Image (cartoon, rainbow, N blue to C red; front, side, top):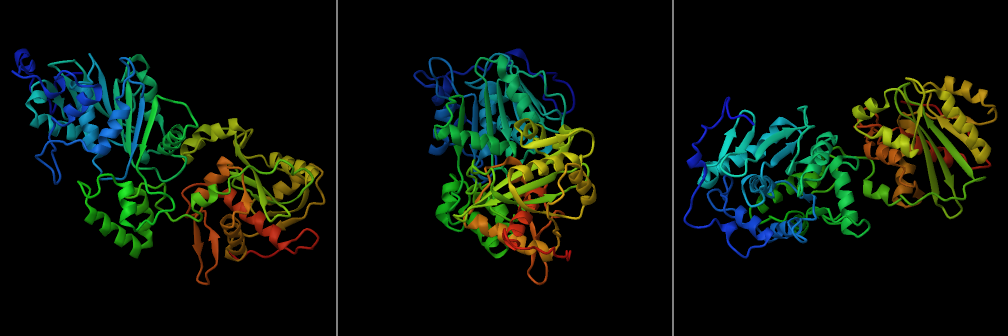
Length: 539
């Protein structure tokens, strides 16, 4: 790493780099464990900003508990390779991350010619940890004498000790391959929409004997985000479902059923509350969120560390997941209703079947279609793993650049031969092409019933979907694409109070949610032995 250029500190003389002290530094005392040395180093550093500026960093018990797990050793090795600390904002994550990065750059965790990186989603976020590290270095002669800074490039080099280097990286800058990190701290992975930078750094650590990836972040707002995948994996490790001693999760979040306005709930999610996290500030934000419903989702996500999107969703994911039991295996020959939401030629098409049972429960089975050409690029655009879903069998990729309705018609024909299909509800979009493909499949006696997507038709459909979920009557088997569509679903209301699922307001595809609502509505409107007249769209 070069030392010339804008913002570089003067190159120090060799004798100045080798800091000589009469007494050993705190982490060099005999008899300390590995975590003791890390804590001693952190508590040697100053707090550079905020209410505690000018004081020494004091490791709190909850921070010590996390560090003891991460830096625990077996023999002379540290089993943990990936450590995730998820907590709300303003609980001291930047100071802790900066201190640990310095610990691996020039402290007791440093190794010869190590590579230390802080990672973030954009350049501004990436600069935060660098700026905090630089502020600490300038106040600690031991570090200031040996570390050379390049502020313009956001880089550092330990000239007086290990020869290790540090750089701030962001996801919007290419060229992450070819690195060999010994320590990485990823700041606010919860705001990342894709995991390219995380994966590039994680897979690059294989050449090191004792590498560590540290992720410090609030929760992401949705289930498919990279941070959500890490937390879900960590929860399974913690629960003993997965045996992975290389992965550790410490997760501070309000329980799903906790009162969001209770100070006791705030304390569960915020370990620093009443210490350096202002109780008064949290109370102020809670009061505003209570008075302004538009702020509640942000309060629960950023202050309570719950997985809640900023946009008010149609169904809470916790309610939807409670209906995620596997569908019954004995559906052959059973009565069902279908609904088709035929999308534009290059967008997602959804086909859903619902099967009612004598006990009042309902099974929902879904099929999804997208053009095969450009599937990976489309997944990048929609920020979801279409290729993974295709490989898992949840998505049918039709040949070519446009969805071929013949594939959908073939599926419907198979369903008609396997089940007692009562009717297929459909939206008018591109339906004539589908009807011709269905006729080519020899399906001539299927009741095709037009179902508009305006307020008049969708209001009762939305109501029935909401009801069967709330009453735990639905089983959807956790189909990943259907769950994604539900998580994106947003409702709008007309002056009369009627609701519809609004594609223009959604942040992602909702075709599966629309088709499911249509199928459930069709089932209610037409019992098995009764006639069913089509209704008119009033969009």
